[in-house]
Image 1: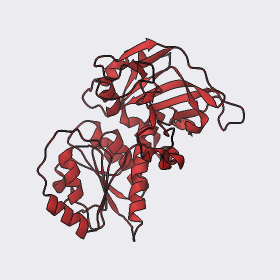
Image 2: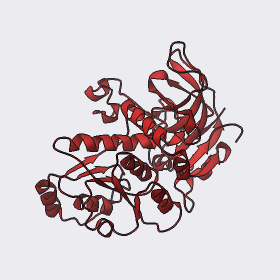
Image 3: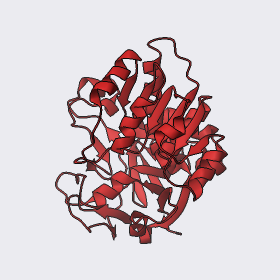
Image 4: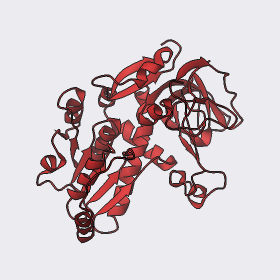
Length: 352
């Protein structure tokens, strides 16, 4: 079978190659891969900046944003042939730490977790893949064209969960939310904000292309100015920061209303210096009872939340996020950005 592989730590090693088909264990699903999403993490691995191959190997099968259809399932499992499924990315560490032992492996304390397509376990970027039933999540069949959006949706489902958990330390009835960044994560964060019944505002730098229309179709408000200009007197109760741009990260912390909560989901590059009024920032956070929280990855609870959110969403709106579908044979093209890209996916079916 064909798979999209890379040699972590090596530039220009991305390739589609023939690999052995996996054999399903007694507690595993055998799955026909339909598609994978391509995100910034995949591009970093392909550039040799990140990633770990499985022990004893020098190449890693990419793909952590999965979608597939069950070919076979163990007797007595909750899965049947034909079910639409995604595979969970992270696995708990073998020790395990306290968080992993309680199913919160997204909060692993010792860093010994592994991740499909990222860290020491092959990903889902192959025509056939296997996954333990405990780490597979069933999707509504109506999501067959867009279900690879599940994994990034889990990331923002967790972020929203964290926001509401923090907010509920006191009276909390948020009305407005600002999302910085209109990439896939930002747009999915906006979707969940709208589903929470909030007045959602999305900030991005582009003035044309599909992003403003995608935001408008959510009945949210699109902005392409500075944070201060976009927010004005809004003073959002919640900010979901989805860019990782250093200046936006700090700006986001300063524009909330009292008891504001900022969830950081974008990962910033190192080595970029900024001048920040740390005293003023600290003063605002303390005197306004504000909170800032970082959020990454997801556990099984967040996958279930994401599945529910996608099932409730307009399929046409979800499909509008996918601006390019690249066949597996040409998968390397998905790693080169094109104008108006929002979400790029690689299709895995042999017919493509």
